[in-house]
Length: 208
Image 1: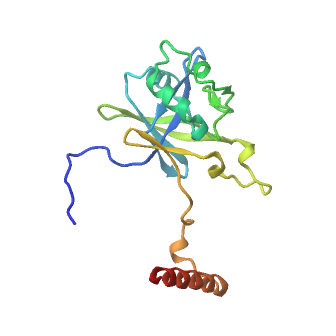
Image 2 (image 1 turned 180 degrees about the vertical axis):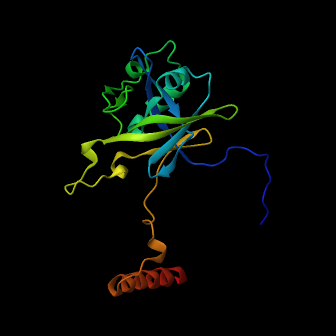
Image 3 (image 1 turned 180 degrees about the horizontal axis):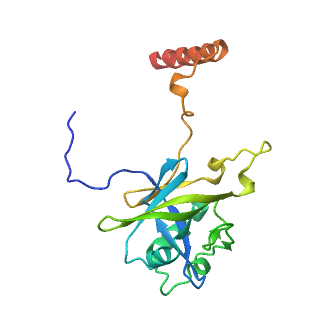
């Protein structure tokens, strides 16, 4: 089996496709779609987004030092793409994408009411890297849509059908294949017996 060698590039896919909401000093809101976003620290909770300086929202983040990361879903896919190709210089993206600004608790930028999870962020460091500038930020507040909470108040993001971005295409996520730590989890006898029966069933059908 061979392996093709390509030139260096950004092929760390898939990535979360998030809608970042901002506001300028006058409080005018805007939205931009960001695929280069990630978690960088758990304590304190910190994230990063990378934005091209020519983007309209770039100056808003620089001016205020605040933004909100809103997770996206299958229902929000069209709005996510729209906000990535239109500029806030001449478009009210909240109105055109049929999204609702929702007041944040600790930052001036609004949340998106239709998003299942919104992370309010304050910039702690700005790193010009080349084509993009990375904004490192601390998460100062989190809000979730209560419709994705079960009777025990546990959050289920899978109910929202989240989407990801991979090399120019949006994708929905597939089925769960295991929880963190399942590879070393000790199985009880009943579970092990059931898995053994299922494996025997699969093997017997392969011979048929």
